[in-house]
Length: 161
Image (cartoon, rainbow, N blue to C red; front, top):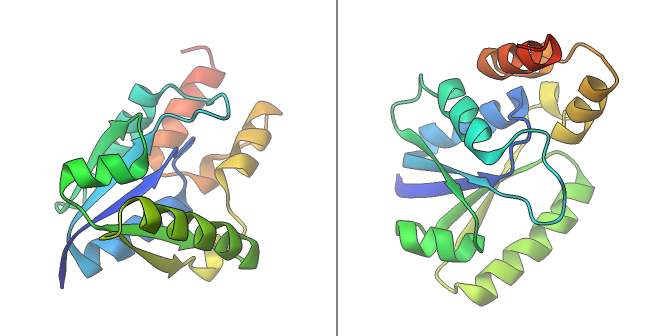
């Protein structure tokens, strides 16, 4: 078993698909660090500190998983944390094409870094944070797509709480 891996993303919001990848990665690695990124290219639905808290609450049942926010290059964050394996989830061929290029770029920047792709479970292959945000912004119910802490939080901000 490999010692440590990092699962990075904006997780805006953290979905059941993300949770599935983390649970599976936690069985493959002794330690999994979920790195919650501050996006530079898009405005997030939720601030980073809220996303970190919600992800941490969602993975509290996994003793070998920790959560940290970061606002730098992933390769620099991974190097600082002493981690040389990245976990990425793949839902479709389009994900693979993008993730493959990202993995090659990360490898150029940090040669010791390896990327491990986990295929999405079939039941979550359709699920993306972007879809959830769009449904939520149009008043739809997104609770079936999210871990309970995230669903509760989004319901509370919808209700003005």
